[in-house]
Image (tube, rainbow, N blue to C red):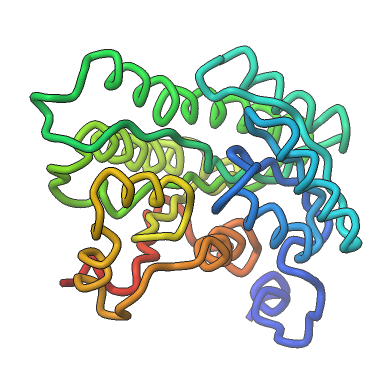
Length: 267
């Protein structure tokens, strides 16, 4: 076993998973993004929180600092490419480098079949959920290349991207496109030491799923019945998977869309 392999397989390292890393989290004001920002900081990362809601961002950042972590925030609308690039630049300005990113931010539109999805809604989901992440990933690769040299990026997809999605067809289509982008980026940037993966959450108790429940009462119970573990995930459970993929413990994992769905994908 060479020294690199020995170091990676050592079990006595008590440092946090992300010790010494600088990580940007989009959609960090609530839900999975906020849970991820808290977890990454607790695991030793310097975290930059980005989202549209400054008041909530500030609250989460202050909470992290109050718990002894390192966090700052920047307002960012994924629908604004210049703003997305500015968030990446802000991270480097504040911390001097970028080691990783969790592209979590997303939007949703009212559920319904494809023929009833307004074109404006389709354009909105494309702009935020796919183009926004495309722009973010490109800027993050450039920042990692210019500062840390190597790193990892995790995109937040959905189990709704892995099969037919008659209830949320536009959302599922853009998340499936994101899976393709993840795989292409992994092949493209892997030779530089930049890993790119995605998590595909199942039913998760976020505001977005809460809005879906309001529009389709009982949908959470229906989804739970289709899940072998019989329940929805807490946002922090998705964050745990993202933290692992960002860490050196996933050092030989790239191009993966990791289902975090309580087993629903095998039903």
